[in-house]
Image (cartoon, rainbow, N blue to C red; front, side, top):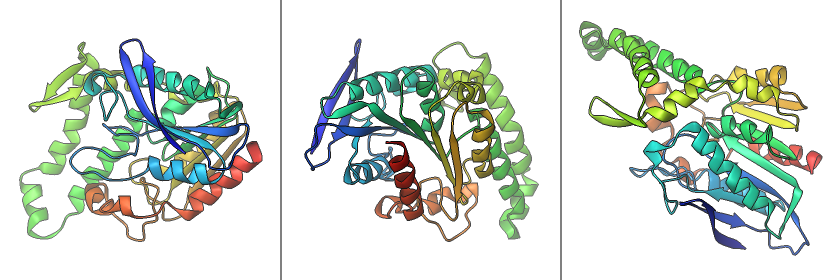
Length: 312
């Protein structure tokens, strides 16, 4: 069964989809799916034809395995009201808390067996919920003991290295124009502009950017938040994920206050799909082409199922 739901937070309406297993039970364990960064809807799809079908695919998997699954549109995206570009990290955390509390109140849900699944940025938001709310466990996908500032620095470093490695006439032209050097300097300048800003948005090269979101992420101590999480954690990244540092998944064990299982899945990328090829950070569009039509990593699904069975 699939139900469209609305959660009210003052003047804000957060819209989502509640998936309920077909098998009739008095109540079910449940999962809340929290999305990654960007203007993503409840299915994990963005603007400009970006079709990843991440969260509807995850929800279908959880439903098939006897869990109620709730996914939602971010504020200002899809059917949710509000303004996406003016939302800070703490706004997103508070939105997620409101949706979590709504999920626990549903008659089909066993409130003592509710899990939060956070993907990418959602893997930073999920622990912030876990330290304040009663949860049966947390699953962190494609992100763990790494701040947004560190993830951005990692991505920028890869981009500069990839630019320097381009060969042939194109590589020579890039070097003559000093494109790698310019790119290397742009990151710190951008960060400083965001940190010094006071408004919700600022313009960078004519494009409106969410300065509030960047400021709050730069102030957010992901590791300190993990120290306050006492419920079980499963942390998973893929070896082909170039948007985060895969090895940092094991740092969750160092910081988290409770039981942790950490794993790197061979050949899985940031979109939770198997990927045979090696792509650089500059080739993500090619790497994720037609991702929405591909199945989620079978090893990821098996890992999550086995972990959830142990903790229900």
